[in-house]
Amino acid sequence: MCGIVGYIGKRDVAPLLLEGLQRLEYRGYDSAGVVVNSPKSSALKMVKAKGRVRDLEARVPKRFAGTTGIAHTRWATHGAPSDENAHPHMDAEGKVAVVHNGIIDNASDLRTKLTAEGVEFLSETDTEVLTHLISRNDADTLEEKVRGALKQIEGTYGVAVLHADFPDRIVVARNGSPVVLGIGEKEMFVASDVAALVSHTRQIVTLDDGEMATIKADDFRTYTTSGTRTTAEPTTVEWEAESYDMGGHDTYMHKEISEQPDAVDRVLRGRIDDRFSTVHLGGLNLDAREARTIRRIKILGCGTSYHAGLIGAGLIESLARIPADAEPASEFRYRNPVVDPDTLYVAVSQSGETYDVLAAVQELKRKGARVLGVVNVVGSAIAREADGGMYVHAGPEVCVVSTKCFTNTVVAFALLALHLGRIRDLSVSDGKRIIEGLRKLPEQIQQILESEADIKKLADDYADAKSMMFIGRVRGYPVALEASLKLKEISYIHAEAYPASELKHGPLALIEPALPTVAIVPDDDLLEKNRAALEEIKARSGRILAVAHQEQEKADHTVVVPKNEPELDPILMGIPLQLLAYHTALSLGRDIDKPRNLAKSVTVE
Ligand code: F6R
Image (cartoon, rainbow, N blue to C red; front, side, top):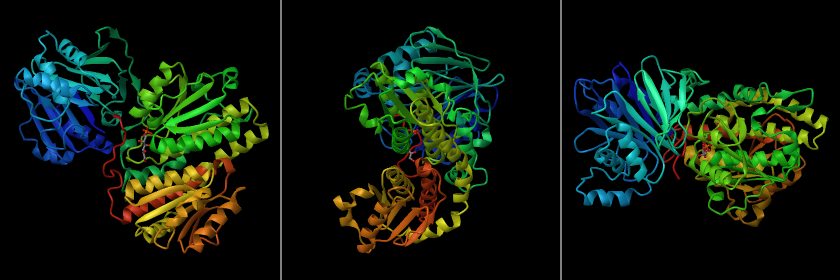
């Protein structure tokens, strides 16, 4: 969603900010803008444009010098995408400029009040309210002005403020929307995502909710919104700038699918304990005695992470024999859930910033629950709110749709299930069996990736479908759900996922030659049942593409994947279906990394 970049130092700021915005493009946006402050002038200079960052760049005049500035990519919430609604928003005198991520809930009341006081609004946004509140605040310091304005608003924000009368600083604040400071040599950066910073510095400070910061070229300080100083030690970002580049691939999605063998290797690295046939997960902050008292596990996530959670729940039930289920976090938080002290809650999120998941975590913690985070982005909000957890170490995921993070999250759940299982009743030999299976995954994923050319042919063949059905049973069902989500997100082909067992309870009515079915058919104890479902589809002249461990006679095509332990099969069966979605979208000419209407991390409700 929206992105913020800011810089204060000695360099010419506009090119730096535009480069930073380009690095945030992956998050999804509809307009962009930049404002700079030049030491030689008392007014701020601003350019905004609906459309892409390159449209903004084309509008930036030759004389746009400055050494301090803030910039933004906007994802419309209040008011349509337009030049006027793009951020930054300035006050009438052109002294204050604000960029903002998040939503101001009481914007409409404040707008009415400010209009009655004579303020003229130039945009339909909620953010402009904040600009006027800062501008009209008569405190002596910029920090006080911003603090005074923030006190009047309700909602979420990651915000950066520039003021012509205070040219030596940028003031930023965070409440529910990420803000990170990048510490350089006599220069300082600010952004909503480290992706915008890593080509300049890997030393970062992540603000907490309720925290503000003043950044100057050679200094920064952090404090709470009520003014109390806080301590913020810079940490080093794990990833190099190159990790955010396309690395010779045509799309980030292709790069990220191809990275999965290495990514899986990373999530396993240093965690396996062969001596006790278990894994070490120190970050859980849960000792064996406590782990034995868990009566239930509830996993919460959204979209793809929710699907990873469904597979995770299955792994936990089968390996640790603890009742477990997954639920969309967005639903959970609104149904006044019963929070049980013997239940362990697990929040899953690639970005660690998804608002619905974060809000569910906060609600759970407020009710005294123990919450673990299974998160990719180190130091993200959910990782910090949780009582403990594990990082999935997939590396930066830039494509809007998730692939390698999904796979690594499922592997992380396999580790959690094994860890809990070995504390409870999972035998040494079963522990060994799972560990051997986990170790085989990177090579087996590589093997699947090598069949890309065949999957591409199939994708070209199926790309004319108007709609597709995905079916799977038990472990195969979340694989079907995820594959159907991936296909619809990037190809815009309608797709539905059903448990194969439910076919005859309704969806069989849809089956006809024009509706292909993708069936997940592992060689497990449900093989015959799955084959019966294929028969039912074939009897109605439905086309079938099976993902299986062996050729399926009833299927028109079979993608054969290598066999692992049955518990781990969902991990491998998902991979060819990522490639199927990818090549289908490619053959339809879609913008794969930035599908329409979607954003990478959904930091608003
Ligand atoms: C789909 C996709 C989304 C995200 C969802 C949650 O490909 O990526 O469904 O999984 O928005 O995001 P995170 O995992 O960052 O919480």
